[in-house]
Length: 300
Image (cartoon, rainbow, N blue to C red; front, side):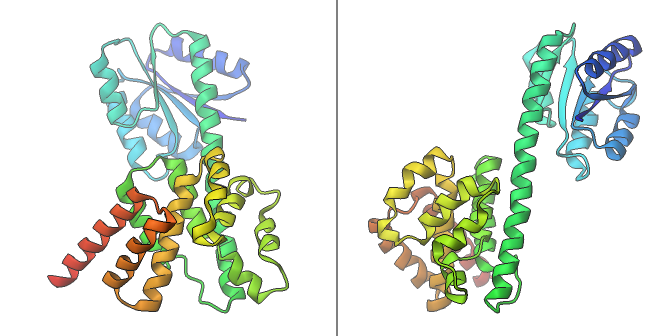
């Protein structure tokens, strides 16, 4: 049952909100000031916090900022409640991490709609997070099977993370890209087992991530000059950019292992791009990362 924390020093309003939330089937908690909100949030881990801006002691802005800085509470959705309708208040709220706003007097239909939306988003994020853990397990299993040391910080993951830090893609696309890069190579696993490549990929049947990861893996394991047929399905599954990043990262790190020369490796990648239609945004960002690495090495 989703858990919602109401934080307001108006005890009458807080009590009314608690009753309404419980009538909708949620578990409702209350706090009257910022410090107790932070303590309850850390202990109870609510899914959503309804947070008044005007509180005794710490303001709602300060509480929200602290919630989003704390690793224990940063993923809790915060709906700020205010009697102020000016845009400046909202902008400040979003800057400190608010997920949504409610203007007093509160419209309960609006409250319900916002809560349902945020809970749906949280479920999606939690599912992707679980998918990431599944992919890590597959990677470890694949490395053990291939006789390789188990290493989640392999070069392809390092470059994947560097690219995502600079590309500023949305959270879901970034998570899918990491999972795609993290997953063991179906071709290599096929060579070590009695399974075909398709059978290795089908190991994800029945998993949430399988719906979008299977077309990504087929795209990555097809001949690079013959993978255009997979792009429409990748677009339907909202994972084309993630697949394109994984393709470039995997190809670059494989070439680098063979050539042992960063500049030569990237020049080959750029030549291939004319035929293989690599994502230009990702390729340009990789070039900037490599240039920065070269500068750092030259001044050491």
